[in-house]
Amino acid sequence: MSTKKWLKAEQEVLCTVATNFSSTLSTLGSTPNISKMSNSDKIPLFPKAKSMFIHSGNIINWNRLKRKPNQNSTDEVCECIGTTLGAYLESANKTDLQYLTELRKVNTENIQVLDENDRGEVKITVKVFICTPQPTTVIKDTVNKVLNELGTNFVETLLLSVAPVSEDEDEPQDSGLSLKIIQPYWEAMEQLVAEDKVLSLGVCDLNKEAFEDLYNWAKVKPSIDQVNLESCCVMPKDLTEYAKSINVQLLTHNDRPVFVPKEKLKETVLSVSTESDSESWAPQWVVRYSGILKCRGIISMKGYIFHAVRDRKR
Image (cartoon, rainbow, N blue to C red; front, top):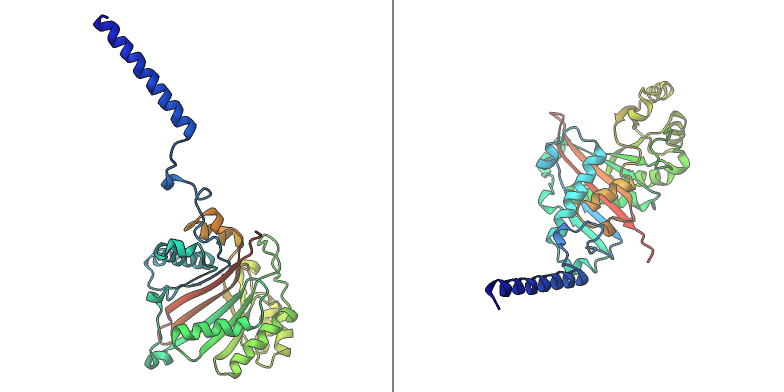
């Protein structure tokens, strides 16, 4: 056989082998690139988790948050949740995560315990956001968490914010809150005053009628009513006049009526985990505490404690 014919035959054999090899790979399927898999394709990190507790610690010193001075409070708490949860997932044993039923992370490196000698210089305000109806024990439990975290025996002010019945923030928001809804929580708040754990009480987003009902009924009268200016634009005249007549402070706030929407929480969890991990979480409550230096009016500490549960039908 001539050299040319021999080379041609060899080329045909090699082409046949290459074709068969490509066909075999196609049949078997190529090995997936895990790093390029979408979140929906990834194996869940914590498939059995049904509860989540996140303690941000003092966020004043967080560089990430310092760079975003104009972010709203919902974005702020969600960034705290995502950053804290992400750090926890990175450091946790991946096998252990598969069997955990509760995710609990306290940012111990950011916990700032108050110095007894400086306690008199700091005014602490705690705001409890009730995201969905809760047992009244949640009030005492959440305040005790803050007291333990800060190493103090009392806080100056406790504010209550109860989410509206509807999560649709496009609906006109007369919050629909009434004395019947507020009353059980308020009784728990009054008990904390009796125990000297709280000095004064306040409530959020009550219209004049509901606030008057609360004021007339309560043993410990509210000293503050916070009003969301985004929902009313101008302070209601009837509420202003009534508050003035009973010497109650009317303050404004910019917290969203639905403080942590379910979709926002899902987006936050998804950013540090998988599609499956992010599903079916429902915010239960959020606590925000802040400490202001009385002599200078400067916020020296601020933190969040967050709780959510997951109901997955299996």
